[in-house]
Image 1 (cartoon, one colour):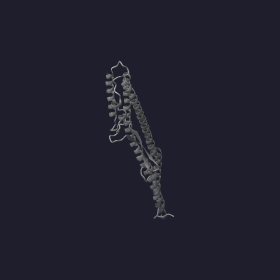
Image 2 (cartoon, rainbow, N blue to C red):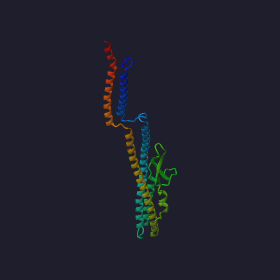
Image 3 (cartoon, helix red, strand yellow):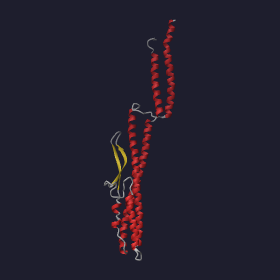
Image 4 (tube, rainbow, N blue to C red):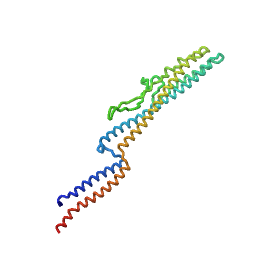
Length: 282
């Protein structure tokens, strides 16, 4: 039955055109923004996951910066510790030379005093941003270690986030390498023999401390590399979930533009249908 009051064909064509136009608008927005899921209404579940991951990515990027500062702090201390080992080795050479009777013990002691002062200067200067891992008080506030934020561990989707730190303890050369007080002064071969035993103990202490700092530096470097890779992987994951597949969107845009043209043509034909009824009355 045909009616001049209700044009069913036009109604159907209009609904089809509206649907095509909505899909076309969504596709154009996805292409222009690069985001297939840019708001919660696009896909609430995926959007929620992506926002949680993006917040974690921001946290890990901040952790990368903190790890870089931690690496620099440990690197300075490690370089200082290695330099101290070299100075103690030089002191040991002087002490060994003092084992002979026919040497000037006073001049040797003067050289030793100079190198001891250099060791003390290195210990005091080996700080980065106010933190010194070669002294008793790392930060000037009584701390005996330095914590570096290394990771954020999340349990379950949207679950509790726990901060994980790497703790770097001070090697405290300030106390364990008190050469001024505890290294025997050389005046003769007897005192030189005592000094040799002392310096050997100090040297082993310094080597142990330098090795510990080196191991900590390597751990921070490895963690920094891991966090960097993790950020890249998480960023790629968010991109896969939310970014527009441009090849697919381009093909869809072409298809929708064709559908739009056909829908407009269908609506035009449907709107002209009531006019054909006039032929019945001629």
